[in-house]
Length: 115
Image 1 (cartoon, one colour):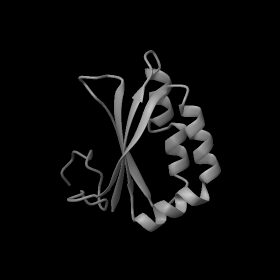
Image 2: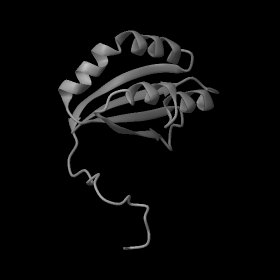
Image 3: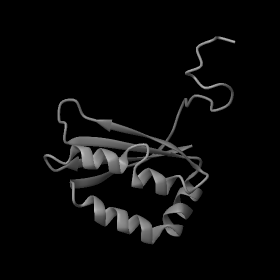
């Protein structure tokens, strides 16, 4: 599994718009979900600097991520253009191997019955 990590800084007073765009049901995530190898993402806001965010996208493998970016190039570019409305900067922090990731099989972690 690979993790693609981005740091994004937004303009003042665009928090709601930005979080909707990158959130669980946002346009960026909806496009990523078109690939079966997209495993999900973590979307984090810096407590000390509320205009700074990290986005970590998890993909099953690098080749499939690269295919996704090639297959959806036009849609990705359109979304990147749209995000300029609320982002001051976007920086790729790199591509990482995801280590010690919980298993995705079996009951969900939120199941509390213990059965």
